[in-house]
Image (cartoon, rainbow, N blue to C red; front, side, top):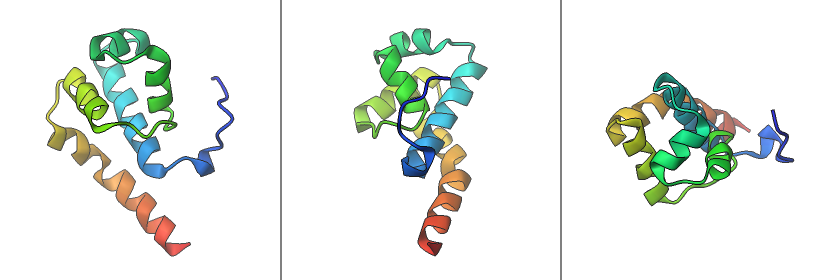
Length: 94
């Protein structure tokens, strides 16, 4: 795995959860990162940063990704409810 210089503790938990959900669904569909990036119209290296939780995406890119995954936005974000909710509770407790 390539080290990016951004420690996981400094990454926003919401972005990490989003990236993990994208990676999981992309792999379920059998796409390589490069092929999926091409399909969505997003550069492969930028897609890698998304999956690692390093990019705070523009809404238009979020919808490109969700469309590329072939799911409805509500379905995709339902997957994030638990992960993001837990991260926010932990952050408030600090």
